[in-house]
Image (cartoon, rainbow, N blue to C red; front, side, top):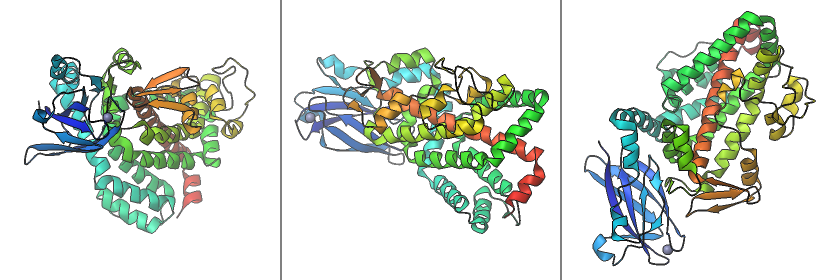
Amino acid sequence: MRTMTKTGYLRCEVCAKVTQVKIEVGYLDAFPLYVNCGHCGTLFSGRYAKNDEEVTASAVFRNATEIDASEADTVDYFCDASGELIMRKVAPAQRAADLMVPPVWMAFHRRLGPNGMKALFGRMVELHRTVNGPAAHEWSRVLDLWFNGKHAYLSAQLADVLDGTPLAGPVSAGRYVQAIRKLTRTLFAPLYGSERNGEFVRRVSASLRTLKITREAGLKAYLRRLHEMGLFDSCEKIAYGQLRNGLGRFEQLIPAFTLSELTDAERAALFAPDSAYGMTTLSFEDIKFLYVDLFESVVKVLPVIVGLNNLLHRGSHHAFLNGGATGKKTSVSSLEQYVDLYTAADKMKLIDYGEAFSVAMHGELNNKLRNAIGHYAYRYDSLEQKIVYDNGRKVMSLLQFGYGCYELILTLLDLFDLTMFLHEVHDHYFPDENVSNNVI
Ligand SMILES: [Zn+2]
């Protein structure tokens, strides 16, 4: 096992209390660290860095001074810190034995076993490298050229990145989009997990096959309408744009990503607001708008799923769920009306999470949380890592919030995949239309 522990002692520059921090020296070379002083609440923010060649690891914190164990007369608080896994929240050190407690990530390692850990961290190290290395910049540059319509440069850039030959013009926009999709899938593959993505692709392909066999005319009409409404283009661009916005925060969400390996029951126990466990890679204030952005992007792409569910389960893409999640009858009778619905809440009422294409949805969209962040109507307790919202009626742990961001990222990736499949089916049914409308 590569993991070791670096134990540090931090003296708060405000109240002088000392906190023992056990930092995981794990797979990642660098990660952000956020620890609060258990006494005065001051945030010690910093960054950890490991140098494999010299076998050293160091962490530099703002608002705290690192001292030697011998300099600390008493240790007042203790916690764990990790860039990869859950940690034990800051707690008062009441007995000497408290300082000997093994860090919680050791239990996580035992739970997954050496092979599980190796597979998981193979993906996470790759993800970390991607978001901090040139691959993310190259992808971002390609997106800018595409969004700005600079197709001559786009062709050369794509060839460079994909190790291919430049796309010779004139070619259809569809070919650029295919190359960009390929690049995007490669970039985000560590996050997908091949097994999970394989299952998603299998289920969506089966439902699409059913549609082709049983309702082909309806499927064609629906795809044609998506094309005419410009939804393929807008949904794909929304998904790309939002994934790019979130990319810089992925590093901070890795401890939440790794929770995907646990069972629902295990996660629920960790998410209890009074659980002793949390994460040290992010502060809620830094990451809260990522949730809002991801939420809004998913809502904008919802018409794609809802239309497919309508078609498969009720025979027409205009046949909306009557009654919806709230039990109230809907007045929405066309996809166009649905797209025009003003609020996310209205759009969300018309999704049934049990219908076939809702397989792209991971976790439920939390509109109350989204509004609480958007309207600054929440309270955050950084020491307890709890978000209190909905007029004090709801409490969510930071860990659950981080996992909620992860679920929205997965949803966006799956919606992107689904939109991509549909676009391809559309181009298959209407090849001439695609070329004649989009020749560059
Ligand atoms: Zn303090």
